[in-house]
Image (tube, rainbow, N blue to C red):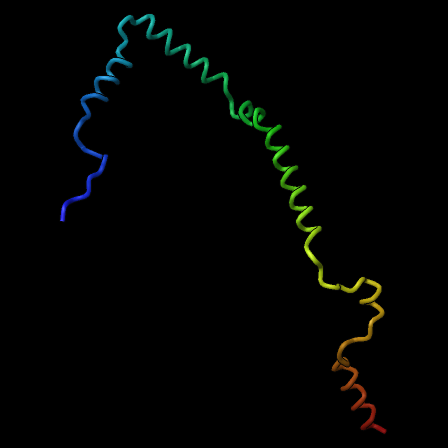
Length: 111
């Protein structure tokens, strides 16, 4: 059985190391500091509420669309014939309550 090949290796990657050294080498120190400070200002310009504000309009539109689709689907589903409130209040009970049976037997035995 051969061991599986995995892209993870504990040894340093020469190509990646060279690319990182080129990208992070300051060279001209003043220009390097200026680039870092410029990137810092760019990062500070984007706040979490700024990102949320950009997505708010699309999020509200998506929520409205989902609500409309859900309302349409709920309206199309067939309902079981549920009684109205008036029918439920007026309808006789399906089974005689146990209390009435016990009370009738107690009253009947006292006579």
